[in-house]
Image (cartoon, rainbow, N blue to C red; front, side, top):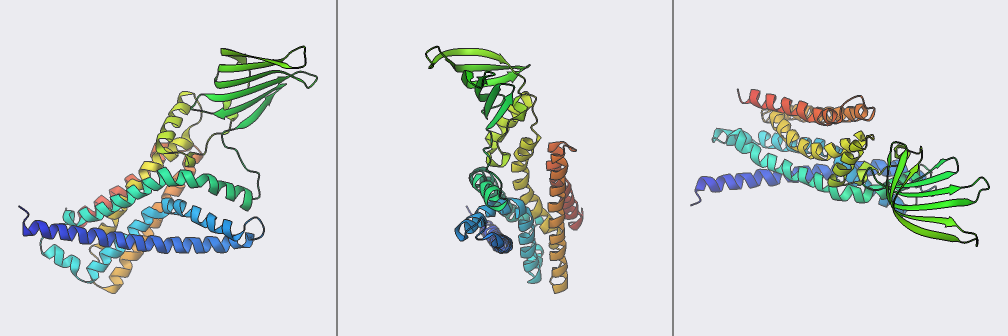
Length: 360
């Protein structure tokens, strides 16, 4: 049987949950509006010089998932802080606590809202960003920076009279096209391998179609299942896929294969860990907002102080995360430590402030 108390708790949960999400949505919209306005003003000078109006609008829309991924932890911190300050200002928080509602009961709907936002961030990072990043990168490189387009993952290499084209598959394997020319400039052998890997100065090729010129000025092709070709051209010089264009499962497998092949993989490990760390940071920001603002009271100056502190803490979290990224890129910090350190630090701060506020 559902009691009156259970009904009241359900209503309270729904009220806090929906109210929190509405504040976060409003701030997200405001930040997107500010961000797109600043970007449009900055890129408007390129209209007619690489960009037209339609492409500028496309560029601004494609930038939104990146902006959400970068700033959502700060946005949810500010959104929850504003909501807590609102109910403090109108004495609703004090009334709830006086009625025996514990801080755990108040935190549940706030954390649920944070979990919904975190899940949304994971969905955007998993299925939206990989789709839009390729097009966004093309616009930035070709139309804004005026550089030649890149074909990530495909590169021609040369050693002596041998030309090599590598197209990354699942590491350490590549699709390999190898052309050998003579001193007279005429090609002597053409190898098209479905799969190949480099090991100890040799390319081990599988499912290879070998073509050679014959005396009738034509060519003859035959198939071999396996062959090895000694060559110093290493796959370390081949272009790799952009980690931002990959899903979590793809990143996990690609990073694992790179590590097993002895190739550099920290950029993929960083993006892999970040896909998990950033959504979880939303829950930490919720706890921080509550612990910072729930005791500010109803005074206007106290509310302003709470909001300023929340914004400052949010910016500090963002700056620290950016600094960790720089150190990780420079390989001065282990990837896992650099990605998770801001979360661990601010989680500790949130728990400390919350327990101190509750008198523990």
